Length: 63
Image (cartoon, rainbow, N blue to C red; front, side, top):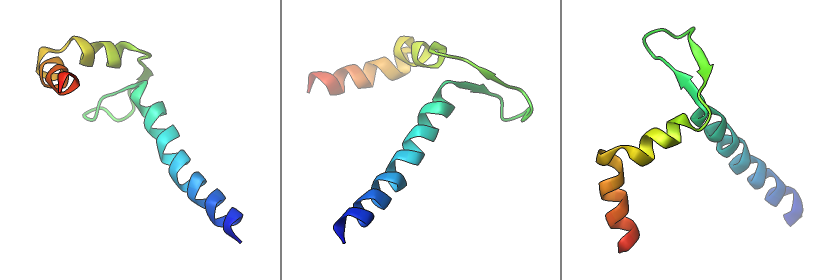
């Protein structure tokens, strides 16, 4: 009886995770909803090089 509930819980967790990863690779403009394009790793490059993000996250990694 445990196996179906564990399987359902895994699906419940994996689907939102997969959708989050898919949306993180998209370039979406909320002002123009029809203009969605594939950004690839540019979103992650932007966040890693942004001083407003890398400062606090770098301090958090040191701690």
